[in-house]
Amino acid sequence: MDLSVREEISPEARQPVITYAYLPQYSHTASFERHQALTKYLAATTGLNVRQVFPENFQEHMQMLAQGKIDISYANPFVHALAVERHGAGVFAKIIELTGEATFGGLIISRRDNTEIASLEDCRGKRWIAVDQFSAGGYLFGLVHFIDHGLTPGDFAEIAFAPGPGGKQESVILGVYFGHYDVGTVREGALELLADKIDLAQIRVLARTPRYPGWSYAARPGLAEEVVEQIKQAMLALDRGNPDHRLILEQAAMDRIVSASPEDFQPVRDLVHRTGLQ
Image (tube, rainbow, N blue to C red):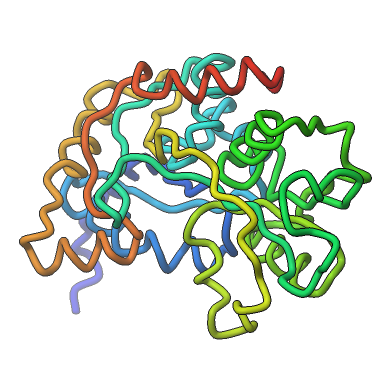
């Protein structure tokens, strides 16, 4: 080996990371498992260095989006309605649910053996646990449904929000199941997450809320338009007829991803203004 022969090696320029975050309505493990294949697909398809990040809660997700620490946000329409108005985030795509619809709703639940609660009116004076103050299906939709049936926040003995990072939908269901709270609000489909852990027959669905525009993708203010377009086109190219794509979509609990604009979410913005939560 001739050590007199030297070659200068320049380190490769590090590609900027494009951060992708799933609003933490479920545990971080569930968020990772649902979107790992999708983020890998986006990175491979666009050539961008896409990495999933994990905010601890809804509030932190919104703060990170406003601070530029989340480039691509996958979140409920309530969060994006606020993010668009407060910080100028740009909604560019939305999902079609596995039901084939672009809308979803919330559930108002109680324990089946709680004889004091058989209707929404019976929730007056009771303890209500919701997912988060920025949850659409787990709070906003239920709140409006209660208001439409004559109950205001002041009519409840308590309104609590699920504690801790992630896993909040599950926490609401368990809070009701174990009798810590009388009623709870979660999004459609959340009960099935605990089908192998609790006896769902003990949970009564008191009401289903109307359905509203569903989850969407938004880009942080200032993210380069060409980056947003690359991400968007890769998402729109996902085709259920392709077995690999179908697996990616089903893991993420989506039927497909389609184009969207802020106007699509006006019904949710109307709810936000109506309740004074903006």
